[in-house]
Length: 97
Image 1 (spheres, rainbow, N blue to C red):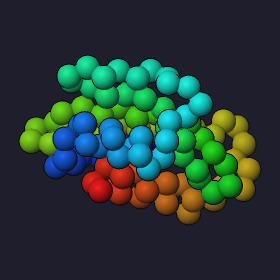
Image 2: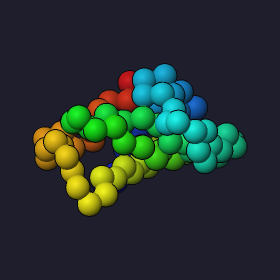
Image 3: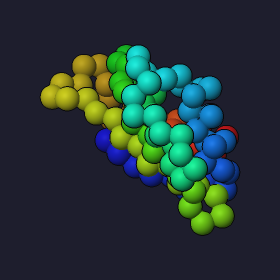
Image 4: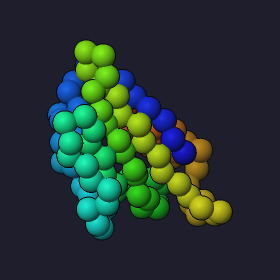
């Protein structure tokens, strides 16, 4: 699953929200703290499963844009379509918090 969300907030503020709210996945991942892009992998709970959420945040127009993706492999144990929809909503709230 993937998506993108635009925000009026800075890329630094959005990146900090992901770190504060979700926490980093078990490793530092592909973190890139350059002036133009912030990227890392965070912990995302979807239904009863924990997934790696890959996020790239960068400046866009007068704010920023966050692109994200998370997967489930072949099987989605105890994860409903509603859980996936709620995950997308949760990500959008983090971006615009």
